[in-house]
Image 1 (cartoon, rainbow over the protein chains, first blue to last red):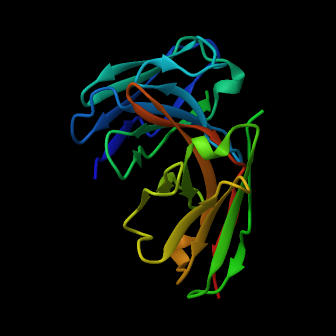
Image 2 (image 1 turned 30 degrees about the horizontal axis):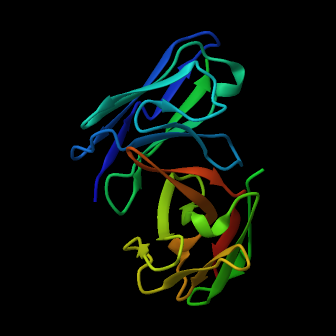
Length: 107
Length: 121
């Protein structure tokens, strides 16, 4: 199975900050990497697919980059509604696997 | 509007069984692959099972293989998860999620609201 490691596990930031979350995989996966946002008590929401493609309806302040084993999710200017937990997920091989999550909190 | 609505969760004793359902609407269900993903209390996301659009291809996580069975009824726009020999570690919210294919694999682009399963005596 492909292991996914996100960093940091938690992050405190302020509205307007630029934030970056990193995801590293245990083997190369090209660009087979997705990012999800989950708010408490809600289902996850797809933000980014194929490492850098923005899902329809997702604000442009979200962006993704990377390929191979190292990936990043960047939020260019944090908004109050962005405080949530973020997960990376690989679709390169079965079983699909998720990172452990990065909890983004208000400073 | 795409909608996925899970049902069938609840409290069950260890060793018991439960059947989850996911009712799909707003899209051509028979054209899409589907998944079950679960989330234990306070934990991250764990993929459970996948089924192809026709039902001909099925995969399971090792943690549920031999105990859970995924199926679908395209005529009824419904996805199912039969869970047998349940264990305490199966306690989680179970989500059904639609799979979409693109140039770089696939993504889970729509999720249901989840149905909670608690395995406890």
